Length: 87
Image (cartoon, rainbow, N blue to C red):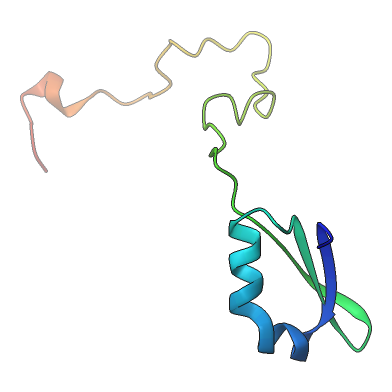
């Protein structure tokens, strides 16, 4: 059996449960479903490892020079300073 298969949407509909079993057992690596000859979906087996969330946003934030992230940026005084705990 090949590691990749391409079939029409109607053929996929008729064989989908067996194809899912083949993906799960790693007999197939990828299934491409077509509609009128054009690929519309690509199925692969779910990976055993989930991607880690740690470091996924690395490099996506820019902090301008001269900005101190530890300095408070609120101009008004906190209510707790005046004994107000709830509003």
